[in-house]
Length: 552
Image (cartoon, rainbow, N blue to C red; front, side):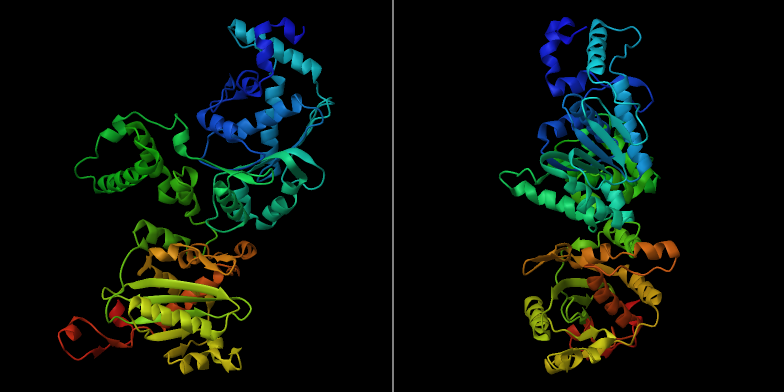
């Protein structure tokens, strides 16, 4: 039976891809039932904004990967010699996605129980499609072929050949755990798709603000400023949990307050009420049902888990610390305690320090700290540059002193500052000539001991808002101080052996400069200066702190 003989009014509709996607294909729902596919709001939103190259940052379980597989199937059936690829975090996961394509193809002529006239007509259309475009041989592991020359391959990575459609799923997972394979996908697989053909890269985010996936997502976000995208530009799509109307519960689960003596319940509610108030400034009014659903997930996943799995904004997903980060737990705690991104003014007459990490051909980083009257360490500013001479950084410090109306008490330098030559004189010598009080630290006896000192100091730190932002140095963008600490990571190989070593990358220099401040504190080089407290304000003589005990 020909298509024009089956409900002639449907014949014109079959020419519409959007209609085909909403009528011809079957999928398994979350309960394992066979159901006819209908686009959900998030899927429809993506489809109507789809570009040649697409970068999707999404919440969990929005059905994007299922939709993309049906889109691939439709392109293969209605185009000759359409070559598509599916890449996932493992070959097994990629094959699972291919199975969705096989299921949808096999069910094109499926007639459900108690069918309607439309069910019968759509099954007849599906049967005609299968007759015109049958398999070329039986589907095999990782590959499906049709007689029209179309092929779908599912692998852990793809290199070589030319694709008309590539689906890359969970690149963030791969980037965070298998960085070498992420580079293979970025440099190899993505380049198999020529201009004017299609790439859909979709993932929930993990890995913080580092790794190939984060770089690609940020590049796509930057493209939003362009008036027009080229066929090689990625369009950014952000699909948050609010896109799914199923993410809701009975309103009573939010509208009913906790019991009077439930302190934890009231603390959670106070936090969530503040969070929802901020969210509503950007997305509009939330229903009590949406609030109840989010609160249930917050309790189940915790603050970090819900930001990663069900982000409301892209920054929420980016700010979740990856498992491989050295200070992930401490930075998460500081953020939840409201110690990160704070606005505050320098305190009068309190000790101030600059800690350095030195690099001749690499990055040099400086932190500006003040020890507060409350014993906390206030990170006022951060700077990084590459290839500059010592006098450049002297100028940075002088500018800080002028800006904040303070005088640096002491500079803390790594041990090689005594010997490292810049313009024929050691860094330590040049800083002394500039009039600074300087202390070069001894060689670190144990990296793990040094990192533990950092953890102890971190919980007493407060980071100014300006330290959240990246720095512009010439044509390069460098991570700010907070980003350096958030993304200071272990080498993936060292985590497998148990002998953990930090990764030497663009974040490690800022983290090392922070580490030298912490080592200086543990060695007693922070806190031995004259303390100018309230007694001094009243005219008393300043007292001398003994060691670092006064900070505790």
